[in-house]
Picture 1: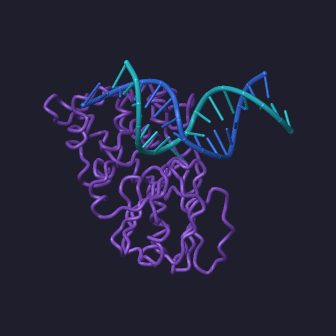
Picture 2 (picture 1 turned 60 degrees about the horizontal axis):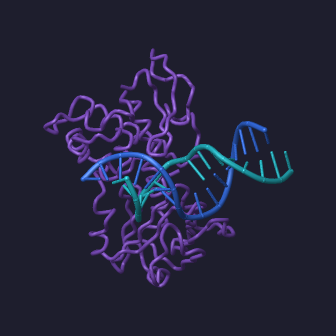
Picture 3 (picture 1 turned 90 degrees about the horizontal axis):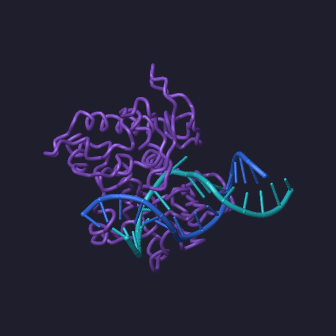
Length: 273
DNA sequence: ATTGAGACCTGTCGGC
DNA sequence: TGCCGACAGGTCTCAA
């Protein structure tokens, strides 16, 4: 489920009942998501106040009074479900692995059937030197992410553009759906070599400007729509629309599906070059 | 250095 | 109905 827009929706939903509130209790019902939880996980959270809560790429980062940061990643199937203050907390659902009881009265359940999600605690030092977090590319909706930055990152690369967009070191937050969507908006082929959006000097070509605009547009709209609602394939231009007509006016092409890096890519072979 | 394949884990869906 | 394979919005590791 979760790419940048979904993670941002989760952050927004949690913020009013999570940020600046104390963690009164933590139920750890399974301590093994993608990695085993760190030692003393529960004890290190117990009684801590969430001083700040932000999103970086697809990660959620909660800074605690202790200066440690609770790092959460939703993986493929993860979500954080909120029971608002004043409501009866429901019985734990299947695959509720960690449940936070906040001083706001809210109960927040981390649910993740496939357990590709991640939850850990990092000291400031280890946060700053984290091999993944410290090498993430720019936030796609920030001013740091522009055609020059994208072209520089793609310069000389022969890997297909779609694969490059999924590389979180190039741009952080795109996943399989929005990478395909952005390439369609930009009318760029997913198979094209990533390096072709840059000149040999590393300067952006026109396609790099188009792609950056498309990424920002696709993500901005998805965030605005508060994609936390249920998955509906008709919200997408190409994703999950194999054999259906291309939605670009006057294109007349048909959406195709093929595999790249072991994952499905959807695109229009007619208008995406 | 890049790149591709396989791994992790559970659920769902379509075909027989 | 039941079984089986294919596939799913992510990331990591390992080999070539």
